[in-house]
Image (tube, rainbow, N blue to C red):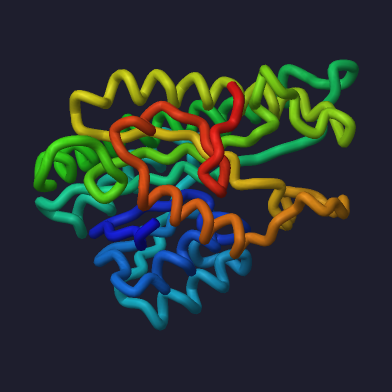
Length: 259
């Protein structure tokens, strides 16, 4: 698999965990993107300190404020990116921002479900709608036929926990609202792949692995992977995706995950 080669990327939830890992690895590519947009809730806050440090060293890194549950914030983020991209469009949108909890069938509430869907499912939908004109522009401006992430793509960060066929890690927790929101995100990805194919935009869902992050919890398990291993693997897979892969659900090693 070759190195990813794109002119512009936007990553949501970029101030920590997998999102920050994506930003680091993109900036470290032999041929890094001309623009890396790192979106997070509070760009000037303490939790974005590492991003701020990176931005001070990399002029191609732009930190954008974004709350994925607020349509006005999403529109402002799209406008900010558009201002810098000018006529070139956005090649790659990585919908990474997400939240989780361990709600069970017995204690899950309407609020739990609403919050989880708002961030994990509706957020990626609204982001994709807002950035669609920029993705279309990138696709139209790319040479050749077929689909690829170098041309234009939406990558939705899902989870094996959203698999209905194989209910992953049930023994560690029901995580009901999280599982449901990710299963819905998978369906969204499939629908986007069908709806956006004719625009030249590839769409795929990824299971990043059970990654050692704050969100991933503290349980020790031999199957857990580091942020670096996960992100490096996903970028390798992303670089090789083509027409046949749009609408698929893959893990960080490129293996197909059951729906």
